[in-house]
Length: 390
Ligand SMILES: Nc1nc2c(ncn2[C@@H]2O[C@H](COP(=O)(O)OP(=O)(O)OP(=O)(O)O)[C@@H](O)[C@H]2O)c(=O)[nH]1
Ligand SMILES: [Mg+2]
Image (cartoon, rainbow, N blue to C red; front, side, top):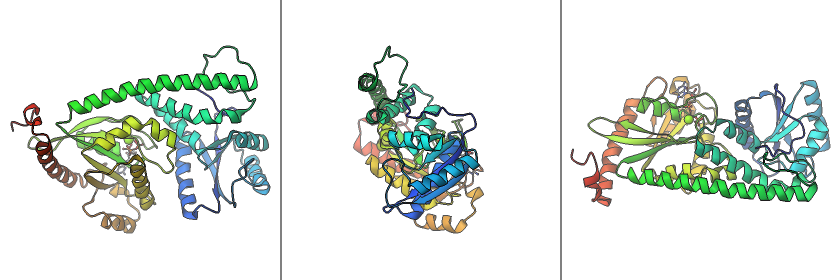
């Protein structure tokens, strides 16, 4: 699907300039951290980040986001550094802004959401995540169609001859709405199936590994379950929710689900589309929150995860925080402070195995506690349970 507003096609050599805006109602350090994250996102999407800039503005300009002088500065950088792509650290640029900017700069212009959707679209592997991503794309496109005006929107291939202007947009709208209904039905079926699977497993202890993207969630599950999940030094390596068994000795077993990584300002329509994956988190008996202990912004990552959990309405019943990547920590002081602020937290490395035995001990005792709770609340399960005889 391609319903982008961009008039300029992507080039192979996407040399990018990233632009953040420090407005009257933004905090300066948040702007910088968000820009840092955007840098990673843009690299993950496959572009080369040549330069980043922060501009101060009272408010965003309705036509060109930045002011006249700032636009000139951007233009100069674009020309001098052979930039092919300008990414604004704004969740959604309006179609008219994109058009004006592309006209002025003569290169492609994108916003944060498009970058994230692009990464998700390329990473989606299972039928479920493909549906989720397409839904997110359509939900993103729908309210923007009007702004496309007479521009040719290249949505889908199935539509035959299209009339110009409003009529074409109406056809697109109807097409998108029909597609959304179809996808939602498919997703509903998958969600129901997931629920059934969960119900069938409800006598087992189910955990989910959550955390900021690239924190090492999949690597940790690999180590705990000795399995080969998709691990990569990129953002959003995992889009699908995998579930693996982890054995903790003396017949103890828990199930662990891997989940999609969290980031700052995760677009709302994406979160909505990933509802069924998120249900996995909400329904889990316990959560392991993996934190990248080597990050230069541990606090920011912790806050982002808290915020996403709150947005999802998740209040973890049991939570183990694991500060990962201690093998490459540069700033021990920040890490120690974060560990102190989280009583009961564990730390170590999913790569070297440091701290994993301790984490397993915690999981084993959590297993025993939860097993007790499970039997008290659902005594009828005792007979169905394969381990009940032990
Ligand atoms: N040095 C070091 N690298 C690690 C450690 N744990 C994970 N990594 C690396 O960090 C990168 C990301 O790991 P993943 O396990 O894919 O991270 P994730 O949290 O699942 O990421 P997403 O699925 O993208 O959200 C990979 O290159 C891992 O090899 C660790 O303890 N130490
Ligand atoms: Mg992963």
